[in-house]
Image (cartoon, rainbow, N blue to C red):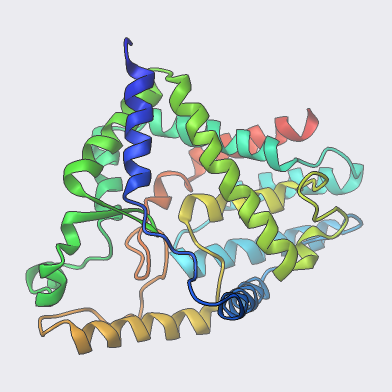
Length: 317
């Protein structure tokens, strides 16, 4: 398609111009304190998961997979099927027994990029609409009918959060989503390379944070970016974090407190109207209370089957 690469580059650059900078500001001491608090929060979040060592038994691997599946379900409401868990167990057990074939950060970034772009290329119009609705944020029929006036003034449903830190007005976001789908389907290699650059940055950030917050995550391997080799189970966690934009902070009790604080803030400053309390809601994933993303379009059995197949192939390369 003539000009396709240039148009794709322009759209990605446009997206980046709307990015809300989320880096902490302040003095070096304040930034260091913020970093310490963030790392402690990730450590708290990861404390409920178990990652097997190189010498783990089959039962330990199954328990680790089950703990990660529960972690994801508690935060997003998405259930990892028994079939998917069984495939993940097999991959992890094989990696544990052989002690070789871990996936590097760059290789995992390429696997995730191809998986994401290929899934984007296959989205139907209904699935694209579902993704759009997810990016518009948390909603219920009652909230749609009587939103707090201050939220309405801010155009809450007119702006899409394409990432937790990237706010884009619908007039730009919707054509962008459609363009990404169509160009992915057309095999636009410029788009794929730009997506790889973004995914690689996210993967490296996750590895850096986890190496500091949860050293056990790297049990049996190096936390150095150039040397780290990730097992299938660890790769699966990073895939979840990249797609959901879940920073992996807070355990379930702390997440519930954060959602309650969010609700109290809207009630206090929203100027009336209605906002649903957080009880029974999930923080992330589709219709997430804190950040809503179309995770369900990627974390379903067929799509995860393709991801695990790619991880299995990548581990042997």
